[in-house]
Image 1 (cartoon, helix red, strand yellow):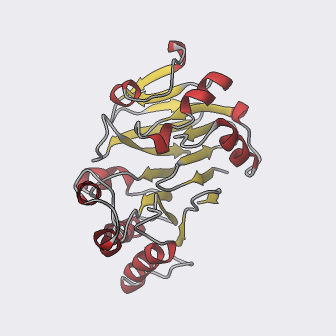
Image 2 (spheres, rainbow, N blue to C red; image 1 turned 120 degrees about the vertical axis):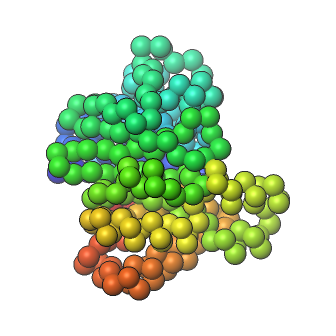
Image 3 (cartoon, one colour; image 1 turned 90 degrees about the horizontal axis):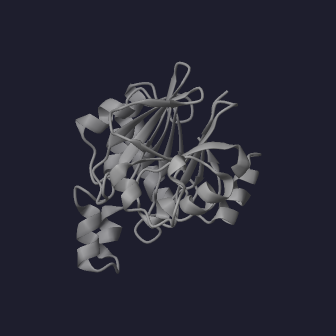
Length: 258
């Protein structure tokens, strides 16, 4: 049975765990080495068991502990060249570094992986879809907008972590300086609750059994707002949340089983 878990999710840190029972893959490590160890312990896993560390992009809330755990546990890192060259993670043994490219799949153990480009203000950012047997799982966060290209990669996912970063009104009325508001609202910023809800509807139409809304802003969103926006969109479209599909919000500081 596949274990797909958001370890932490939000503007303060992100990390996701997927396992087919034999191969354990970590995507991003936006926490300290000790923090990761504590999080993994909550799902009966350990850093020593991690087969690979995949990186979506170089922002600190995704790579804070990447260099530490790669060196400490000799975990291979998989990232695009642009991402790796812009990570501030210290020196890593070149034998541990594997460059990947969007739209070029690869395998780690029994898990197939497909990186896809995402529109975000980073060097060469990607999302990931994972294939275990006949099932597909995806992470789609840190993107300023949804488009047909991304949809083509994430549709058909059984389970997915989908960005629902901000409530537009909260962001516009909040204390962030104007340039930061403009960046978040731009096409290379972050996905709003409204756009997440629209995407969730398409995912459910294409078989999504579980959606976790992730990467919520601590300043410009609330879990209940994100949940309500997507819940209303789904129910208005005739979806029975809880029976047709599961819907949750990925927790900021502790694991969420998807």
